[in-house]
Amino acid sequence: MIRSALMHMRNRILSGSLVLACLTLAGCGAGDTSVHLTGKVTYQGNPVPTGTITFSPDTTQGNAGHGSKAIIHDGTYTTRESFGLVGGPHVVRIEGFDGVAVGDNLDGNLLFKPFEESFDLPKSSGEFDFDVPAQRKKAR
Image (cartoon, rainbow, N blue to C red):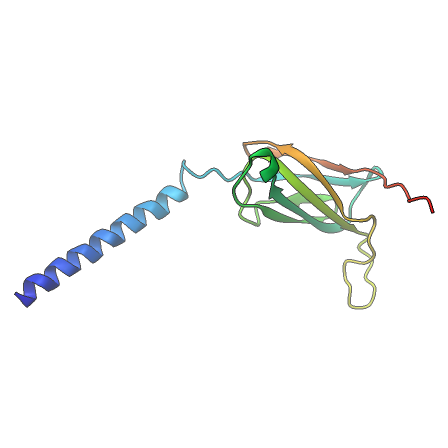
């Protein structure tokens, strides 16, 4: 009786492990909907030396899923070093720095106030460039 119960438990554990393995493999295969983007980031026509881009699905436009973040290096970025993202409407936030170290801050000084805007991103992997517009100073 005990042996039968142990065999039954072992079979359930093996079955559960098999299901988990199949689900894990399915998430990495053709069913994976992650989009990976690469591209250029410019400000006033020049490559942004260093910074970050944050991609957040725009829920106000019905987009859901995981967001992503990419590092800007010498005016280029890629989401391949992160989880990628879902395509469609996103709120994109770009922070750019001059790349000239100031004390412990290796990124240097801000080139512009953080730029945030909605973009409809591709639903398949590819290139997508960003040009941060010049920002107007507020009148006093």
